[in-house]
Length: 273
Image 1 (cartoon, rainbow, N blue to C red):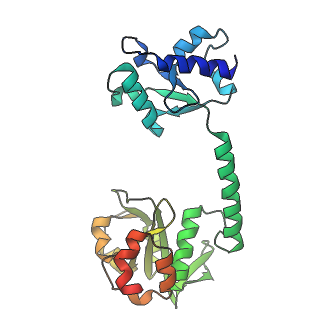
Image 2 (spheres, one colour):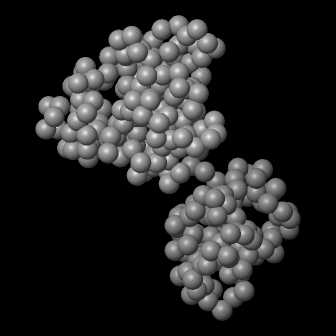
Image 3 (cartoon, helix red, strand yellow):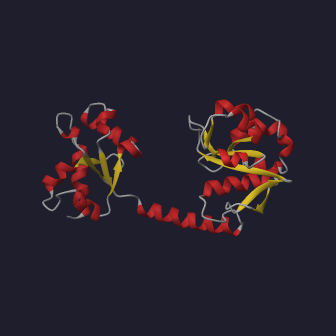
């Protein structure tokens, strides 16, 4: 089975009106080279004797993509137009798309990431096995507040220090906060004087900063358990975009403005420009 022949069948199926067919209720659909080209696997099995299961497609480089997990706007658009019916959540939950990823684009991205990681390592931003957002957020905190790191007496490696006070840094990487809040270990709060939460957009720019006294956290969040969830509704009054209480802790205003998202920078510009 040649890939070009498979794609030809998928393209032909996508060109035809399928409103009266029963192919709308399949478990597997195969995507062609274009965003709006799909065909049910059961149809392709009829066309190719060598195609008995998804495994033959996996050998050609196809990968599974669950609609329920990954989502697919192009598939939903194609499905509803092709079958003249809405794609319900109950139906899409059982559907899986088989597609060949854009390997050239992925490889180019990996090369660029490798170059970026080398640059971040050379500039001592990436130092260990922690993920990039965590280390980048910690670096933001270090340069903005003038923190230094000191060998820890525990097994944590290094503690962050502001003057002679201990600082716990928590990095939250997402364009919006979880309804549950930012998770932080109670024991780490108890061992620190301050807690700094660095909220980072998906594009790695700072979207918010929250500077809290650790005693305030332990006093306010008295529920039992090893974990504290700091919800926005409970700590938003201490966000830098709303409160100037800890403005005096900012040692590098230029860095704060440089690495802030445009939206965040506008909110704090009057105080830090």
